[in-house]
Image (tube, rainbow, N blue to C red; front, side, top):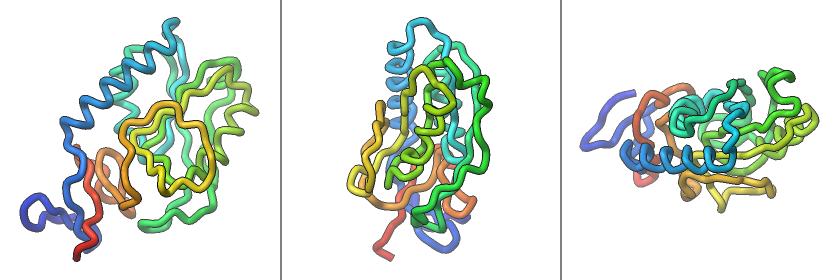
Length: 186
């Protein structure tokens, strides 16, 4: 990754330009945290974090919610480069004892095609989750190919490829505090 010009960054030779600022993300995550807390006044939930992309968002959201609860991690794979591959593989499943008879807050970085959630939400239901609240930082409504219930959305965005704040392009860009969009002018 390298810097190239005013605020444009290069990742694997592709230019990305600023899209969502660190301040805008911080403000929206704080609002989402309050919304999650309001839905679970009892304060005891299981946070299920979709790896790898949602880890930064999840850490900030959990703190912003102020809720007590355990954290479990899930890892799926559906991307190849900058495109969704369309096939979803479950690489790491959540611990069953953290799901059964629990209110689950499922934290995702981005819902675009909806295929990952279409494949994974039934897994949580089969594991006996009492309720599931899907919270995503980003949503691409024009890219959504299947209907999935997204409960809380940080930002609705166009179908452009984005990196930063946990999201990556072939392993790079996760550390960026803001979100950058692929600049297709080049």
